Amino acid sequence: MSNQVDTLSAESPVILMPTSIEKAVELKSHYGLNGEFVSGATLLQLQWLNGRKTPEQIISLEQLTELKSIQFDQHKGELSIGALTPLGSYQTHKILKEFPIICTALKSIAAPGIRNRGTIGGNIMGRVGDLIPFLSALSAKLVFQDVKGVKQIEIWDWFQQTSNSDFLLSHILIPLDRDMLESHTFYRKVGRRETFTAAILTVSGKIKWDEEGKIINAKLAVGGGDNKPMRLEKTEQLIIGRNAIHLDWKTIFSTVAEEFVAAEDAFVSSSYRKKVAANLIVAELQSQFAKE
Amino acid sequence: MDINNKVLDNPIDALMTITLTVNGEKIDIQTASTEKLVNILREQLNFVGTKISCGIGRCGACSVLIDNELVNACFVMAYQVNGKSITTIEGLGGVTVDEVQEAFLTEGGFQCGYCTSGMIMAVKYLLALNPNPSESDIKEALAGNLCRCTGYGGIIRSVQSLAAKKIGI
Ligand SMILES: Cc1cc2nc3c(=O)[nH]c(=O)nc-3n(C[C@H](O)[C@H](O)[C@H](O)COP(=O)(O)OP(=O)(O)OC[C@H]3O[C@@H](n4cnc5c(N)ncnc54)[C@H](O)[C@@H]3O)c2cc1C
Ligand code: FES
Ligand code: FES
Figure 1 (cartoon, each protein chain N blue to C red):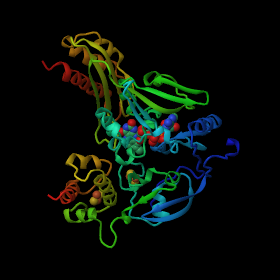
Figure 2 (spheres, rainbow over the protein chains, first blue to last red):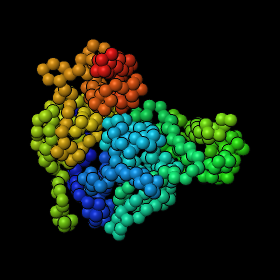
Figure 3 (tube, chains in turn blue, purple):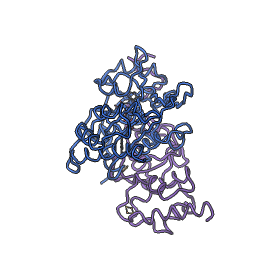
Figure 4 (cartoon, rainbow over the protein chains, first blue to last red):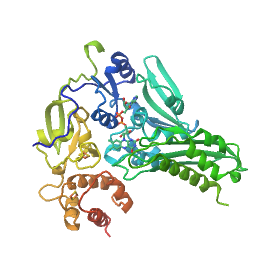
């Protein structure tokens, strides 16, 4: 008996390799649902193996080198990451290495071999990736292109809309602070063995406060594994405008647990996930505000 | 460009000819566009040192290098390796064994050996990026490689012994 890995189907798709974004979106518009954008294909191959229909045309994005650029605009205070940037780039890319929290998030996804193929854009556009809640907490914007032109949208607004698969994601724009406010950004992933089983959950957040300790802005998000990415908007409202020393930890804990719509499976209950998320968020806030 | 006639920048048909360099040797192959690299290596080219276990990117048994980057060969398709250079376990060393293989032999880095070729490719990649890895760097680099036998102690020791030799301690 020969030991083989299943190939997708007897009729393999036609591979189209456009060399410009304009050609890629033209192809997508032409083939519609029969054509699929493919970056590293690490998520798609899993989905195809799980029964998702393989496309007749693979529109491979891998020759679009303009989608691999990473730039930091000092003037705007904005990091721009090309959608085709591999997850593993945090190990070698000079600019990414300057942002430890981004490296932490990228490093938490899959294992090195998959991170060298899987891309940041694919993680987002698959609509289940760990980067969606993380980038929502950072108020990242997505730059899309289709045959009609270019548009920008905040990642959380995009995620709440129904997906339009004709758009090509070209860049992710991450605002980085230029104001003098104090801030704390965090990303935590909880799982059993990171590369072998999906995450139990991830929590992410960005909190800003003024010199008196008043919380000016808070973005909190959860997701990971089978949990649908979501912002914790009630918890955000609970803490915005409060002085940090007056935070009521018990209410924060119960609000997170109440609003997180956590997945349930044979191994991990929904109530356990809620408790873990609430504990992590409280611990992250306390790491900043419960010191004195 | 005429998309109706599929006259594209790079027209490739479902059954395609790809050119690869495997362990330094240039090879042309006719294959389905989505054939897995691990099948091409094992079935068409007889490089059976690369193993298959899970087949879904989770165990690392099929690890090889593409243009010096670690990948899972069960999760890379034929069209994705066209024009690329692949290194498999057979491409390491030469007349004698490679230094990583030697370290695994000396330090008891394997038992049944099924995971070993994948482990060794992952260690080659790690040491190319970081010649002096800490224990946590080693664990992170091998997080995608599962071993059912060794309990990982011997594997980590093998990498540490090699790093110590490289930096002369
Ligand atoms: C073993 C294993 C472990 C994994 N672990 C994790 C994990 O811990 N966390 C996690 O989040 N994910 C994980 N993944 C899933 C996957 O590897 C990542 O989400 C990866 O980032 C997907 O990127 P890709 O380039 O491979 O996407 P692809 O598979 O190429 O594409 C994914 C989707 O995005 C679309 N797409 C891709 N690029 C674009 C673009 N530029 N514009 C528009 N649409 C686009 C595709 O059409 C498709 O619908 C894992 C996968 C494997 C195999
Ligand atoms: S066989 Fe490829 S990762 Fe398991
Ligand atoms: S030595 Fe047997 S699986 Fe690792």
